Image 1 (cartoon, helix red, strand yellow):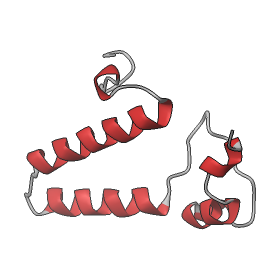
Image 2 (image 1 turned 90 degrees about the vertical axis):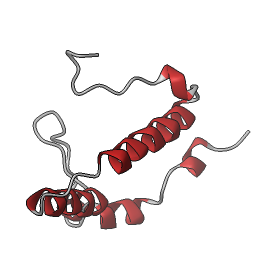
Image 3 (image 1 turned 180 degrees about the horizontal axis):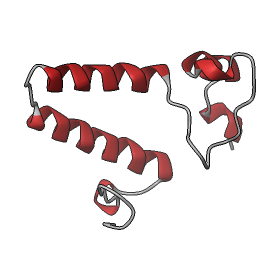
Length: 91
């Protein structure tokens, strides 16, 4: 049996990904969660594409399917057991 902590990134790596945690512990996730550097980079790329009139719907759907597969693996489910919806009301 492996240790549960062996599946997680080291805390210092996570803190680098979330700059607001460099000098504090952030616990207000009910109000507005922090975004990671990776998320910011992805959002910037998406907004730049929109600004320039680019719409890569096929690429976006590929990312959705990759995310569905990774999440299914993370929770020990099959890909077709994971629903992706636009919000909780839709799901």
